[in-house]
Image 1 (cartoon, rainbow, N blue to C red):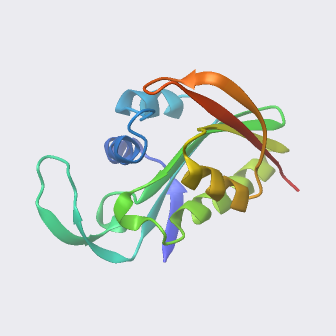
Image 2 (image 1 turned 30 degrees about the vertical axis):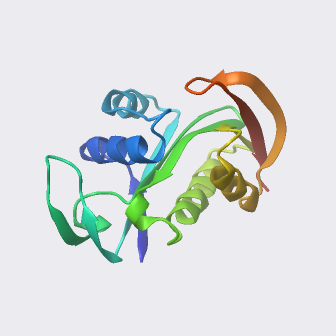
Image 3 (image 1 turned 45 degrees about the horizontal axis):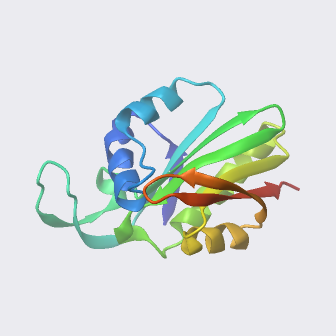
Length: 168
């Protein structure tokens, strides 16, 4: 079972670790989560899972242990800013150990629900052109690419694909 909840300050370190592992070139740091958490027009949510896995927590030199994400760490997170009737999906990531288990989709479903409650009608995002896995995920979620930002990313220099989704 996947549980989605509001991100807590106690989740910031684990979410920064997930971000660093999943998005090393654009990773969010603890201070980024802290800053986002202070903004009232931000959605910060985490996902946990009952699935048991053997995972190297990678924090504080912890040894590999049999655990589940809900033991103490989130399996994934989502951050978005919204204003008026638009939102920007700023970051979404799932721990390597919990990928392909529906966590990203569950985060997105809760995200859509929260946006509708705020009368948001469209979502925008940008993604590295080479990140075909993310692009496919967003397309499966109903996003369409509508433009590119040339040379938007560094290390390596790369275009950003701009995508949007209109909510029903």
